[in-house]
Image (tube, rainbow, N blue to C red; front, side, top):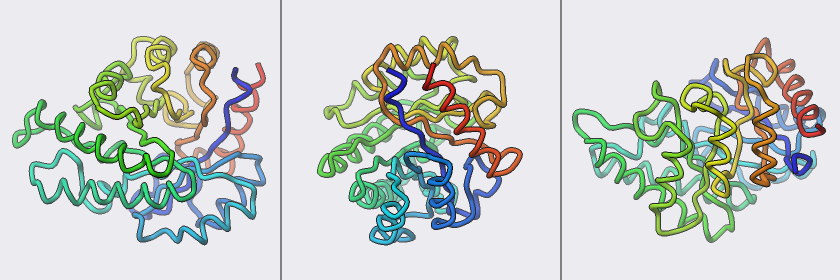
Length: 275
C-alpha cells in the first residue's frame, strides 16, 4: 500500500518562527516552484493567519506548478498572536476558534485540511486538566463541523510532553477523537513527537488505524528523514497495514540547509515508498 502515499513539504511564511521545523522559508512563489522541481506532490503552509493568504493567488501558484495544498498550520495563532484553545478567558478561546475557522475557509477552498497542534494549549493553575480537555474537545468539535462543508477533515496533532500536557500519544488522541460527536477530525501523527512519547511507533500507528489522517515524516532529532536514528522499515510497514494513503510531509528543520533538507526528504520518501 505504500505506493499510494504522497509526498509533501512544509513552507513557513512566519518570520517569528524562523529556525523552527519548516523546510522552506524563502517566500511562497519560490518555495512552491522549488517543491515542484523536486517532484513533491503537495505543500503544507505555515502562515500568519487567513488574512495573510490570498486564496486565488495561492491556487494559481499551485496550479501552475502542478501541486496540491495538503494542509494549513494554525501554529502562528499561538506563536505570533498568543491564541490557544484552552485559554482560561472565554473571549480568547472564541478568538482562537475563529482563527482556526478562518484558516479552514482558506484551506477548504483549495481542498486542504487545517491542523491544530500548538494551539491546543495546556492546563495550568488557572485551568484544570479536565477543563482544558473539555475546551479542546469543544474546539475540535467546532472546527470539525466547520470543515465538513468543504469535504476536508480537521487534523489534530498530539505533541510531546515538553510542548503540551493535553495529549501526548496516539492512543490519547484516539480517545479524544472518539469522544466527539462528529467523525471529521483525524489524527496528525508526527514521528518526532512519537519518538519521544510512544513505546513503539509502529504499534502506535496501528492503534491510530482509521483515525490517522496525516503524517509528519521526520527523523528522531527533527532533522529530515534519514538524518537521525528512527527505523523507518517498521513505521512504513505499519502505515501499509492500516492502508494509509495520505501525505508523508516533511515538517523538519532545514538541516543543513533548506535545499539539502528538501532533497534528502525526497530521497527518503522515494526509497521507503518503493520498498
